[in-house]
Every structure is written in structure tokens, then in C-alpha cells.
Image: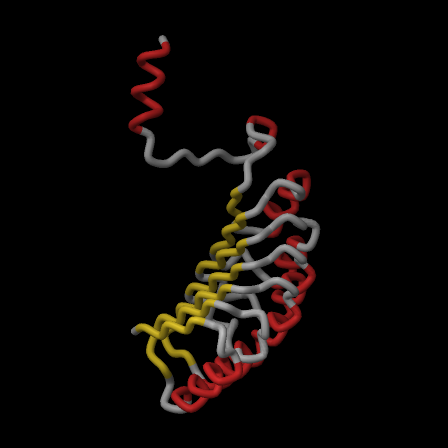
Length: 180
């Protein structure tokens, strides 16, 4: 393949998914995992991974325990991680560089399960997408004193309006966007 052909192929490339190819790109900063075994393999790249996307039922509390060595992680995106609970969020509190957490349809990560987030030293941004956001969830998020941006997507439960107002009072420097 000549240079012109390779440039046109790469120029048209919209998505490239590589598995177990860390040696090809040792400075890769973004990785994805869907199981504990995939997370375990990422430990070799612990100092370079800044964005970690976790998705599916393979992301359990035991799998989340394997994120602790990933000390450079600044952003974690969790998609449909229905098996993760409060115990799974505990290791996230030990990630000293974690600044952003996205929870998208993670059914068990609401209310009291979010308690470990208040120990995240640098957590500034949380994006939470759920079918319904309840008062207990908002009360836990209000305890995240470094929070500067909170985006809630989903309907607010009937008990959540007062909790949302209390959150805004508790975190006056936090930009709160609640959308359906």
C-alpha cells in the first residue's frame, strides 16, 4: 500500500477497535473494558490511561476493584453496568486524579450507593443518566463538596424537587443541569 492509499483509508476511518494491542500504542490514553479480565490487562498501562469506558454486565464490583492501579485515570464512563453497586464504587474513591464520572443507566448506582463518591479527592463533574433521579441520590451528590458540574438526565422522582433545591444550596459553585 502506498502512502496516498494509506492516507485515504485512514482519512475515511471512523472507528478503529483494537484488542490486546497495548504494545502498538504505549501512550494510548483511552481504553474500554467490559469484564474483570479486560480491566486486569490494563494494569500494564496504568500510568497512561486517562479515560476509561466500562460497559455491560461484566463490570461487577469485583471487576471495579481492578481499577485501583490505574492511577492516571481522570474520567470514567460507566454504561449499563447493572451489576455494579456501592462496593464497586469504593475503589474509585482511591483514584486521586479522578475528575469526571459518567453513569449511564447503571441501575444499582443510585441513592446510598453513591456514598463513596464523596471521598473522591478531585471529582468535579458527574453526569448521571437514569430513568428516575430520586431524593436519596441527590442527597449523596450534595455531599461531594468539590463538585462543580452536575448533569442529570431522566425524570425527577416526586420526592426529588426539594432535594435538588438543597443540593443547589449545598453546592453554590456547582452548575446543575436537570434535563428529561
